Image (cartoon, rainbow, N blue to C red; front, side):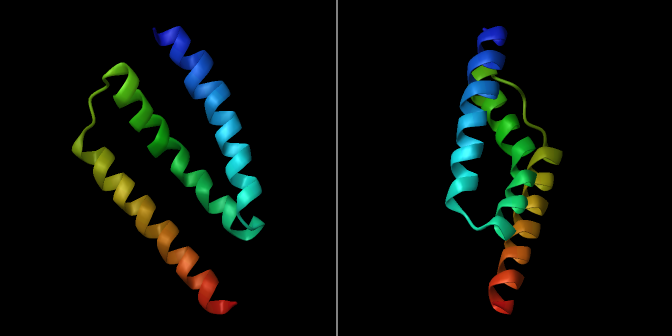
Length: 79
């Protein structure tokens, strides 16, 4: 199951989704979504492999979300 997850979900599906997402947003915002990769990867591991999520994951995820939101808000205000 782990080998299938690595081959299909974390490689092929993630690569396709990442490239499709980059094509849909302006380039100055696309770089911000790089910080979502560990969050999405951890959530997929939780969903497919039943990994345990700790409190530090949720705190870190909130900090990432807040940082990306703040930066996107600052970029839209300057335009």
